[in-house]
Amino acid sequence: MERRLLVRIEGLLNTEEAGTVDYAIGTYLRHNFSHLHNASLTDISKACNVSYASVSRFVRKLGYDDFFDLKQDLNELAAQTQNGMEIFSRFQEGTILPFEDDLQKQVEHMKQVVSEDLLDQAAEAILQSHSVFTMGHWHSGDAALQLSHDLLYLGIDCTPITGVDEQAEYLRSMKEGDCLIIFSCSGNFFRDFFQDTVRFRKPANTKIIMITSDCHSTSKAVDVLINSDTGMGLTGGNLSLFILEKMLLLRCYAKKNQ
Image 1 (tube, rainbow, N blue to C red):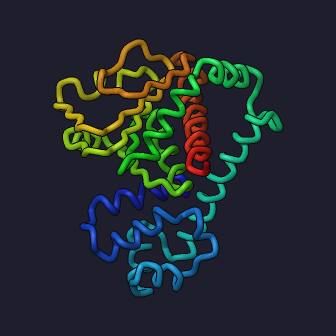
Image 2 (image 1 turned 90 degrees about the vertical axis):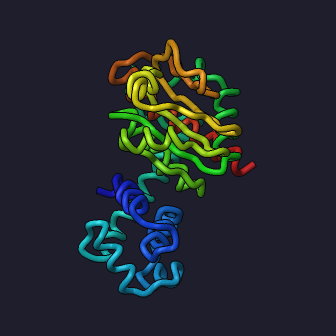
């Protein structure tokens, strides 16, 4: 349940007008979930300048019985995010080996073929943008969702766009200064899903990052292409995207704290 908590919050925010009570509470939770393990109902109501009853109603709108149930998921989400970053950092340092032999080989392969310069370009685009969005479908969508969660944990505002209709609408109305991160095993995200349905418009000063595992061609609109070149299989494609997600996340963390 905790892994989809931010999606529930995001879905509720998409139905609320900015300035409403629920929008204020949802925005606060989305930006601060990693720091709320000791927060009380009183703390959140004061931070959002709303009543206890408003927070309780918001909690029920998310599908929870009470604030205690919500807080359990907040705590687990924060712990999972932090633990995942620590494990991957220790793996890069050589102090822990969390993968089996074949997966270790894949990671080593990716560290050789994925350009440090491309990771730097992608991290800089994320940190310098006005707004960051992620997209993907099926398993690629799970990696996109994970990156949005992890960036929020770093204090970087990032919005996952999960539905095909919502993705199409965003592509029609991209704004100047946006950074869009697309996860796609094949790299054919635009062709496969939006060839005949979306008139794609890319404004000035926007960046599109494509993260893929088996890309032979992609849209000219893509500014940074990060390709693990590990194929389309279960460990070749799906796992690669999650490893690339963590590689990019750690690069964002390093640059943000320089």
